[in-house]
Structures are given as C-alpha cells and as structure tokens.
Image 1 (tube, helix red, strand yellow):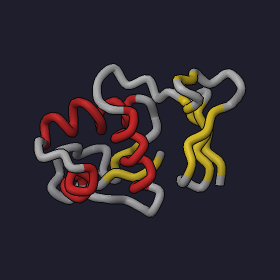
Image 2 (spheres, one colour; image 1 turned 90 degrees about the vertical axis):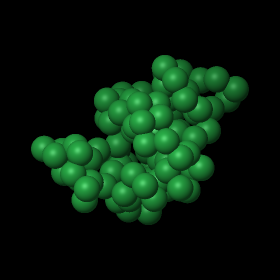
Image 3 (cartoon, rainbow, N blue to C red; image 1 turned 180 degrees about the vertical axis):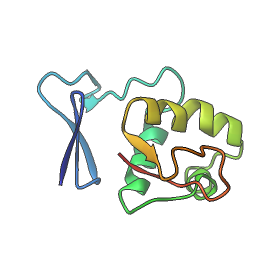
Length: 102
C-alpha cells in the first residue's frame, strides 16, 4: 500500500520517507509541524500504522497527559496535513472517536 501526502510518502505505515523534493532536516523528512516534537509526531504515525487508536491510548503511548496539548500540537496539525484521519469525522468530540492513517 502506498499513500501520497504532498511530498511525503507512507509505505505500509511503517516508514515515513520522502520523495526527492521532500523537505528534510538532519536527513529525515520534515513533517513541518508549527509546534510539537517531530519525534513524537513520527511515533504517533508509527502507532497508527497498526490500526485505528483512541486518543487516550495514543497519549499514553507517547507520554502526553494533557488532552488539549495533544490535540492542539499533534492531532489537529496531522489531520490538517492529511496524514491522519478521524474515524468519525462528523463528530470530532465523540467519546468513541479514533484516529487512523489517512
């Protein structure tokens, strides 16, 4: 399975690689988050490669306690960039909401 996200490619959800024109920092494809850690964002994408996950489970796995911080710094930017999608996009505040790779 191969998905294209602008100049970013996600191969089988396990490795984030970039095309020749992908922005790079330190040899890695740069996700371009305005805030938040690139390392944490990459870890979120790796976790979602195994299938949809609830936000609370993702927060626990990456060690973030604050729902607001997690949403504002990671999930909202990843959704806006088209890397991650909500399983119930019509109800973003649903208690059954999960995130998956787009």
